[in-house]
Length: 194
Image (cartoon, rainbow, N blue to C red; front, side, top):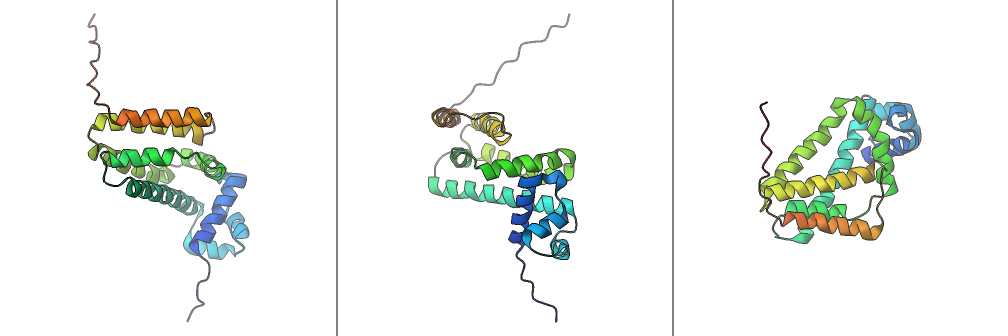
């Protein structure tokens, strides 16, 4: 009978996030993660066969945690119109933590270089976009709100801009206002054939 496993997968992922925040994902090694977790490299290899599998697990855990926050926000909102987009707005109304930003920035280089690591994020966006559009009274307005929210969040995640708390709250509120609008289809100017 084999030895009972005592290493929690979350402990390994916590250690991986620490290494990503400290060194960036590009310099993440299984040895560094094992050292940060206080375990052997073989223990890390038991669950994560290589660096990419470990980074993917970190990404997937972060996505699952964010999705759980959105579900909790939807539950708090109750049975309201446009619950999916309103839950996303509610979650975005809370400022990012320094840890969230550090992990995101640390992972960015790996995500940019490896399409396989972006797959879980792309899937999460496809699912959220479909849910927002399918559950909204005005799908186009909800899509515009989603895009505005993502733009605001992207600037913050990347550390490119930080709004004063009052201005940020106002922007979030105005993005919420978009959800109730019913935009008319835009007429594109006709192209000249000359």
